[in-house]
Image 1 (cartoon, rainbow, N blue to C red):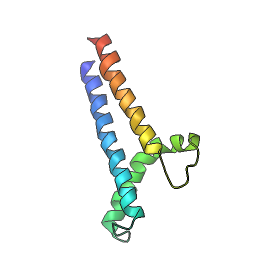
Image 2: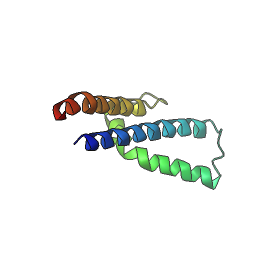
Image 3: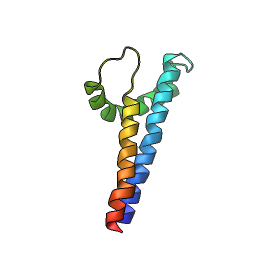
Length: 96
């Protein structure tokens, strides 16, 4: 059971970094730092969008429109942090 919890925590950690990479990429794309016509850049952007959008879409439906500011990645990172801490403190202590 401990191996399963550690695997879930590792997957959450990887997804944490994917969300951060997606947010940074969206800023670079919005400010024209990266070449939007480059096929490699487009592939990276599309991959990050496909990995993060299913988790961010439900959050975006519930938060109010703040203009040009999207706080849904921050909310998702907080949820992942809570779930990770819950697994490591509560669930792991019940198993051990």
